[in-house]
Image (spheres, rainbow, N blue to C red):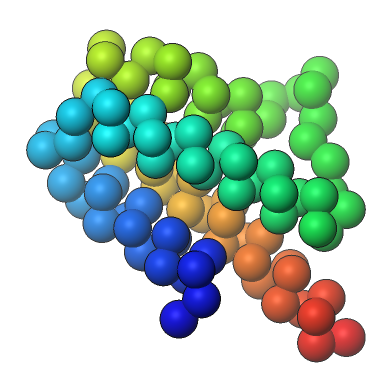
Length: 98
């Protein structure tokens, strides 16, 4: 498996155990997700929209509020991150094959 695939699996595992994560772990995972999404967007040429609702902004806010998030909010943020990273990986894999 690739590092990206491993990270997606890590996010999904963490989402399934959201009630067991410390705020530090949540913050670390969300910040890694933001960095990964930005890097992958740069590779694909996709830019985030600073005016419209952007998942990166939502993830940054969730990371900043990690101590006050409910388990459901943590789970949702981690699954959103995994979904975006998985989608970007599919796009990147398609570009590499072309």
